[in-house]
Amino acid sequence: MAPREREVKKIWRDVDGYFGDLLAPSDEALDAALRANKKAGLPAIDVSRVQGKFLHLLARIAGARRILEIGTLGGYSTICFARALPTGGRIVTLEVDPRHAEVARENLRNAKVLGRVDLRMGRALDSLAKLAAKGAEPFDLIFIDADKENNPAYFEWALKLSRTGTVIVVDNVVRDGRVVEEKSRDAEVIGTRRMTEMIATEPRVSAAALQTVGTKGYDGFVMAVVVR
Ligand code: SAH
Ligand code: DHB
Ligand code: MG
Image 1 (spheres, rainbow, N blue to C red):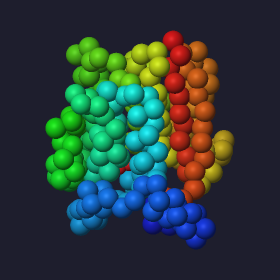
Image 2 (image 1 turned 90 degrees about the vertical axis):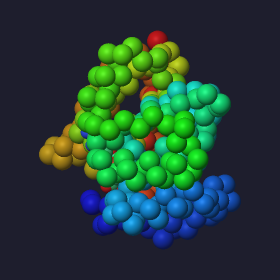
Image 3 (image 1 turned 90 degrees about the horizontal axis):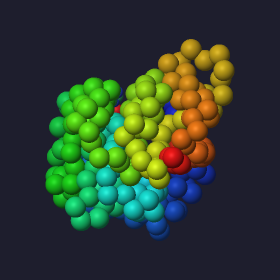
Image 4 (image 1 turned 30 degrees about the vertical axis):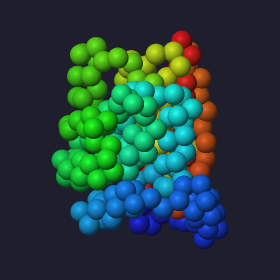
């Protein structure tokens, strides 16, 4: 389902609004980022306000000093993560579309977090290989949110760039429930299913999945922790 036709029930939106207003209240930099994204014609496929706050909290729970994000878009989730970093912390975020990266850079600057962000342009698979070849220090939290057909490869890279205790989160794994379509020929569904099957047989991680509803429709996260 394209973002425009995504089903959002009124009750999901109302509940998201209720918790969002109380727990993740409107924020000038995040609102401005969404306006800039819209103005630049970027798709509105960022995480929601409450999801962004949830990711922010996860980073704090993990005590993350080094975060890796695959898929920047306009930097909405990047801002949420960057704000969770302690002094000296850093987020590396990977984006293939130069237009998205340009908008993100401005949004990050406006949110006053650009100094903590290392935005790398190019295909994520290339950037990941470069990071690993340069012997990058392991990341504490890794957020996978780019082209879903590459989720299996992204998860493998995430493992390579992790240490015991690293938290790995994957966005958009439910997709209105399409993830259970065994015979799906949708590359995104296939990618996420392959990744999940990989995780299931991977002794180095322990994982769960969480279905979500809200302003972004019906979707969910896979979350894993590296146990050895
Ligand atoms: N994390 C963002 C949303 C990311 S949307 C947020 O929540 O605010 C997915 C992004 O991944 C898009 O900007 C898209 O251009 C990017 N992307 C798609 N394929 C990619 C690839 N092969 N390498 C790097 N980025 C890619
Ligand atoms: C869509 C949503 C996302 O969060 C994403 O990363 C990619 C696509 C979508 O709704 O199409
Ligand atoms: Mg996403």
